[in-house]
Length: 360
Image (cartoon, rainbow, N blue to C red; front, top):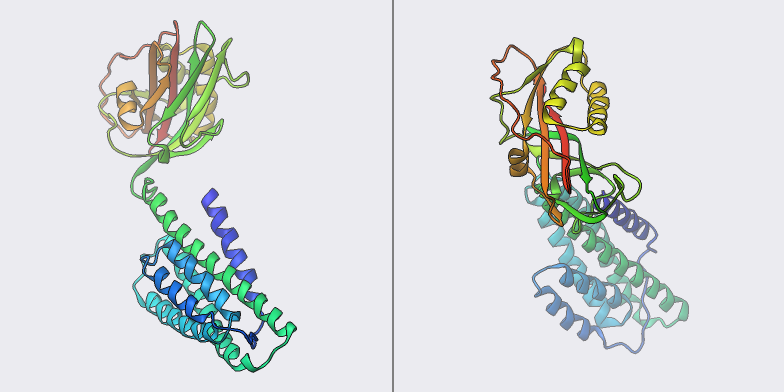
């Protein structure tokens, strides 16, 4: 979400700068000779490999050269022409169709328009060298500054567009059979006050969290008298995970006519306490669509850890994690198995429940 807002802000800023650019004007500077320097530096920046630093350096001398003399005017005209050719070349290449690619191509169109403007500004700058006037020099400076800002903003926007595709590429694809793990609650218990750091991997799977999960540090939780940080009974998150690695060999049927009673029976077998059972039933009774009967396939700690490991420091005496893989009952043959992870809340303990619904 943060990247989305930054991209939006960048595009708005670029648009505002571009639409407020003054028309190409003559640039007066009767003591010029600086154009040679701008030519040297742009050669250096171009040879940085076209990366962000190179793009920023180019933008600096695009803007600055607009008002530093005859050499600068010629450079601006030539460099803008070069940029026009580059933009056209980039637009002719086949796109990937990703979000980042679409943003980048839109910024290239904007860059193309700005470069065409730069050609006009360069021609006008050369034609206006015989004129000396403070107002004209001030207008040239304003134009060069606006040109500079717009070029740098475009370069930054393109870099962020690339970052978006890298980040989104690491996320599970919701259209490729991934599952939304709903409301996993992590409860922490201790018979003494303790400060705990809890982390989940991979971070990119997390779609929502309360308190906010820090990308690098995870959660810091102070456990005191059965509460976390004095406010919450549990740490909450939701995640999008690949639909693989789950067991569907044994499970429990939950009848639509007795959802609450059947859930309670399953939770009692696993040893959940009253608070955990109440939270689970309150959420899932409201969440499950009405109509079909359901199959709850339990995914115990070793399975959940294989999909999305949890780490707590100091390390708890016991960790119990249980997700339910839920799907409509269609006459599946189910084998019954006694739960292996029966929860004990003695000592310093981490308990988690969650679930995901797989609809046909």
